[in-house]
Image 1 (cartoon, rainbow over the protein chains, first blue to last red):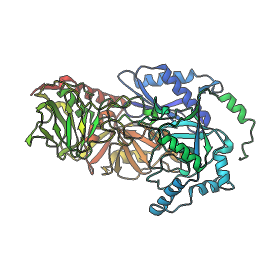
Image 2: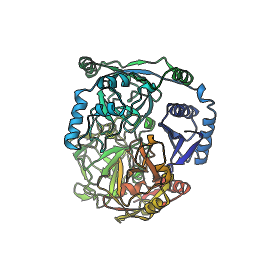
Image 3: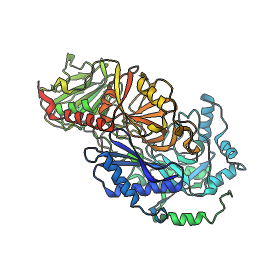
Image 4: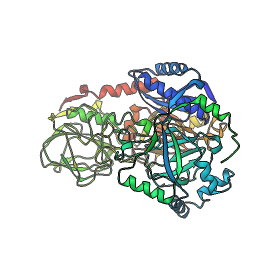
Length: 289
Length: 324
């Protein structure tokens, strides 16, 4: 549910968790990012940083500048100043990312896990079975058939939580148990109802189905997209995956290696939740691609 | 300039307040864990309290100075030696060109701090010189010091012979049992009464697998409130699972049955509950404890935690410094 009143809880002497609801939904996350925008724009004295997540906002504050009770009061007032959810809009850039499905690298990582940690069903087959799909071809169609919403960043620098915006393309998957000790940089994974891109070689738990050659964070800031920020995405951006052959993957990979790759992004779009809801009402959610 | 002869176990450049403004992209603040000792070291040599210095963990470095400097060593007692002769702790002293400062293993405490007048002058990354080694940013090329590196130091005059009064330092005794204050929340309502009682009355052992990301604890089983079982399935299967949310620094993150206190380099978000949070004023105790030490948690109010923090902030000022 989405709460009528936000719930506040302290995290020690300098953090406050502001919960806006307790469900995984686009509407709730859209609300989170609207409230976060208001908090940033308000420049409330004593608020240092915020971390917007799926349903909540973590706030760090300086208690010498603003008291706990006043943070609660100010944030509640901002929340109530928003007005109706239906009227809200957010700037939303669209990124196009090539990816190669069922690639040899994620297969290699899976084989390594089976040999060293635990035997398991191959990740794409887990997704086909659990989501009632006809096979790998349909999995690729369904997974690449929707825009994804950047719902949150975090855990590791640049890591994204992506929500499919088209309900016909929702996929669910259990997480690895125990988790993997390593994952290839650029791996595309599905866990729970979310999709993610691994920004670097890190441990992981999402089922691996593809790999992209396009970096989504770069501490060396080599490519033009990273000149202003080490992380590619901001919450409220969208991502569209473009299936690529191995040859197309290698072509992009060579451009990245040469330091000349231009990220494919459209920056002119604004996301209206009313338009989105109107569109949802016209489609049959039970049909797959 | 400092030449690294031996790097020590994990010696890193840190500053305060650390990397601020990038938390929402997943970058933690980093910075020194025992910020009380760290700031006093800087004050001793005449630096602003947050100036970049070195954090030494468990075993300190051996450093050759390539020019005269005023230096102070605080925090854990790593038996500092200057050209083989004992160097004072909690007191600023002169190091001459060519002299070697050597810190060895920590006899008392776990983390020592070295401040040099002028401060470490590595290039700031995202507004801070603090090292965040998981992502390879800040400090010396993104990581802890390595043998043979030359660490840049900004030119500045300092004053030798300044000292921190005994009663203004963190009280390090070498005792292996620590009282750790915690504030309930943000997710204390996910734990049942028996679970709270057990957390606050049991001995918790600090595991060896602990670092600047998290302090793992071993202790009794947790039990959960109704809310942890009766929740939307998207929260996850285990009672400690919650929809991904932000993690406060210092929080007691319950990962299945293992509590992990998330510290300076911790992940910004994740899918486990945080029933209690260690307030900033208690971080020096975390920083100075060692594997197999015992934690006994004591629940305090938010107001009490903020008063403790104010007290330490008062101690991290020029008023704590006297002539030796």
